[in-house]
Image 1 (cartoon, rainbow, N blue to C red):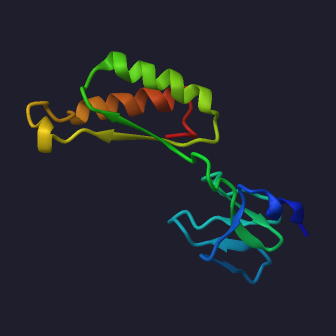
Image 2: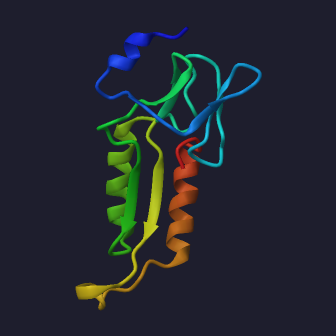
Image 3: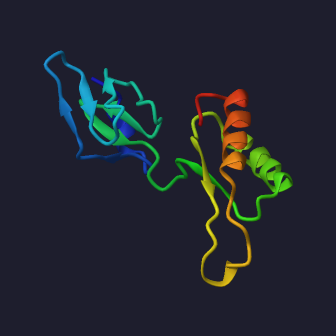
Length: 131
């Protein structure tokens, strides 16, 4: 059995989408990765873990990801975000979003696909586990 005190952590919450496998592992059914965990293991997302034969969310009330939106398509702003992201730690995944002009910002151009590709390449070089 795992450390049931983890269930009393205010950032740990039981989840619904998992099932027990015949081999004794518990499978998380939240994403396509379908992590199959032994007691005490964390999923690839680092946001879910197996505690006391169930899958729990370990990041309730915390940031479990960081999204960089290229609003002005400015490489300087990207590097400012990158510095902030580096401080969050390796367990926080990183996501890049393109800006799409809408409402009162129709005069600002959308993010070119090349900008997102470049940002992903740079981030994967720095830490491939997070992107």
